[in-house]
Each structure stands twice: as structure tokens, then as C-alpha cells.
Amino acid sequence: MGDQVQYQERVIDTLIDDKGRTLEYSIVGTGIPILVFHGGHSNCYEEFGYEELLKQGYSIITPSRSGYGNTDPLLGSDFQTACHAYLTLLNKLNIESVHVIAISAGGPSGLFFASRYPERVRSLTLQSAVSKQWLTSKDMEYKAAQILFRPSVEKYTWRLIRNLSNRFPKFMFKQMASSFSKLPYTQVANLINKQDIDKFRQMNNRQRSGHGFMIDLIQTGQITKTDLQSIKCPTLILHSKNDSAASIDHAYHAQHNITNSKLCILESWGHLIWIGKASEKMQDELIKFLIKY
Figure 1 (tube, rainbow, N blue to C red):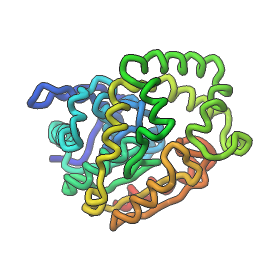
Figure 2 (figure 1 turned 60 degrees about the vertical axis):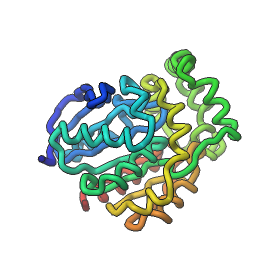
Figure 3 (figure 1 turned 30 degrees about the horizontal axis):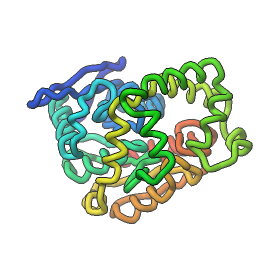
């Protein structure tokens, strides 16, 4: 097996496992591969943070996680099933080892993969990542998600968000900011610019929940301390102290339980650490870490 991937343009493809289940994925870039576990409401078309990684000469492999995009929800029956599919993908691509980046609700998938397949993981980076029990049925956010993002409704929810974001980008960012940041909007406004708001608009245009977000709500509670404690690869934890979507407690929990880990607390505006004034520091920390390993 090799450790280089060469795809100048983003390529979308699928893998069919031995039980006929589909795993959708994308590959872009040339060089040492990074396996990205995207966050909630995302898919293999994710873009946050990719530009800088591509400039640095990495290739990026992004599976649509279980229930997202065209990936079979049945792959989300448990972490073992899903992660075996990701392993099969690496074998198909003839890749011996990868850097892993796990984002937000994709955190548990990345953590489980790193704990189960240590020989295939060069390093692990957690970005605003969930590392323990997240939303529960007692939380208002959980109850709202059950209404707005269930499979029969989510496409209408995202159509509305998309249309409003395209017509009124600044207004929609202001309305949604509290979902991502603990800061009052007057402070958030000082930490973002017009380009950041446009990147937020673009994010809303590629978001869909499919069956994936409902799977996430169940599975984030299934990652255990034992899983984290069995991770041996170098681990970088990048998290904003102002994150309201996944509190800073998740970062501390990961640091406490992963032996070879480094925590970098960011001063950024909130959950979306790829935009805003502190995003360059985050990218610098990430690149320095990846180059080292």
C-alpha cells in the first residue's frame, strides 16, 4: 500500500461493501492523505478548512458518514460497522495510513476509528468535536432537531434556510449565530467580516441532514472513555472557548482521556473555527501538527 493520493479536482465516487451497502466519498488534492469525518448536516462536499490543506500539499478523503449524502443509513447501525466501511475504503484506495480530522458530530466516528485501527492512523485532530454524550431528549436543541431535521422534513428546512441565506446573508448569520457562539452578537460581529458571512452562506447551501443527523443524536452517546483511552496516536484538540454547539467540556474530556494529546483553546467566535479572526491561528496550529507527524 502507498501513502500518496493524486486527484487534482474533487472526485465523487462510491464503494459498495460485501452486504450491498453504499459508502459515498470524495477525494481532492495531491499528496499525503487526510481522512475527514465531517460534522452534522454535512457530507462529502464539505469545504471548511480544505483550501489551506490543499495549498500545503495534502489530499483529502471525505466519506459521507452514515445516512448523509448517498451513504446507506444502515452503515450507521453502530460505529464498528461504519468504521469497517471506512477501513475498506482505505484498502480500496491502496492507502496504508492517514491523518484523521474529526469535526463536530463527526468526532465520535474519528475517535472510534483511531481507537480501533491504530496502525492506519498517523495522527488525529479534533475540530470543535463531540467526544462524549451530546444532546439528549431533555435538551431543547434535541427536541427541535427531532422536528426540523427528521428525514421527512429536513429537505424543506434546509430549502428555507438556503433561500433566506442567499437573499439575506447577514440577517441569517445574525439569527443563527447563537447556535454556534456563547458570545452576544455585538461581540461576534467584531470577530467576523463580509467574507466570513459569505462562507457561512455557502455552508448553508451545501447542508442536508438526510438520516444522518438522527443517527448522530443516537451515536454520540455511544462513544466511551475506554475508546478515548485506547487511542495512542498523537492527537491535537482544537476548540473555541465560545462554542455553544459543542461546549468546551468536550475538548477537556478528550484531553483528559487521550494520553498523547495537546489541547489548543481558541479565542474564536464559536463553533465554526474555520471562519473569523482566529481562524488563521487554528490553521497554523493544524499545519504545524500535521507536518510533525
